[in-house]
Image (tube, rainbow, N blue to C red; front, top):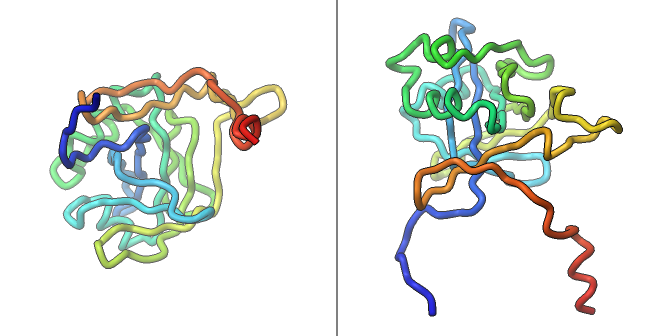
Length: 185
């Protein structure tokens, strides 16, 4: 038996994306955005309304970063999503997020969030979504294994669970991609 819920914005897992930008004065800003993802192998798509300071900043500077929120930074990651840079110019300071300028694009990297996609603005879609090109991915060494590869267990990214408005840590390995399905042949 199944229960019908109708149309809801439920998509699982929904990564918690923190979008970093600079304003026209070079001041760093960030927002929490749940609706975004890969568009092609080197492109991302963000569903952001035009009223967001982040949207305005991207259109002005032509660049942004996407950091993935982690378990250690739930509170500041949530905070930058519930206040607007249009009304709270010191929200980065209040969140206690510090930044460095990306070496690859004109956008900030948030030091506290260990994985970031550095992106150039490409275009907006007819629906108003932002398309960006990934030009680099940078990771803090604290989330790398002994071979210099991403260690998911050290990273502890979170996802947004829309049915209950909670954040959840992604966890255990349950299979091998591009391998387990071969058992069915």
